[in-house]
Image (cartoon, rainbow, N blue to C red; front, side, top):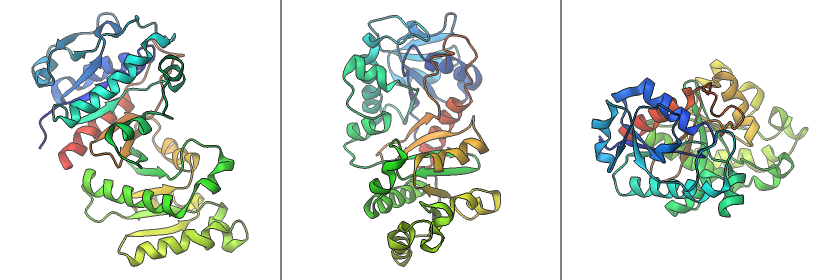
Length: 322
């Protein structure tokens, strides 16, 4: 078992990340080894914390406060008012966290939310988000996003693109890679020896035999049959409106959906607070809370830490399995 701690990146210091880190330590205490990578000056006033020099000091520090591996930022944190001057170090913290995992000094990366617009304005950030930047740091061409909750795991084959672009973006190669990476992640990081994957149709009623769309009959169903013949436990295409109730969920370990909302609406409806964003396909474990920076409530002390706590717990469990 990996005894190194989980590294939690600070995210945008003007968002709810620092507040959630403090709340996570208050609930988890010494029960889960993690440390915050960021500027200790950005923590809410009065947060018990211990500045550490090395991740190996995490366990001893956890009994006294939130362990913080210091990464100084150029500007103070003003909750709800992001400062582009801090953008470069927000990005640098992510890269530093990945380096810690790659060196074995941390067991997994858990990322607090960032603002892509702030990073673009302040640091010329050239990636659509965390996921793509992490893939670039790891030298991986394709990764997939999974939202994992206690009762459902979903993977969208396409993510942050307009709905009108989904049919052209969705290709046999993309869907095959998405299924393959999902299957491999379930096996290696979730400890499921023989993963079962259900694939949603693109169109209503999975095309209704071609009356409501042709993609299912033209290539989605043939691809699934081809993968079944290769030994993959994959089924579909299923009508999306009937594959997320309890009896249907019992028949698979993860669902692959065709676009963002088709995947995220069911999981957020079932368990809004405990959904965790997992990046599959990386050579290390990465989790994140399934929410954004919440600039509108930052600094008010009301942010819910449940998703971050679940993300830390899942990172810990996944590295015990891996």
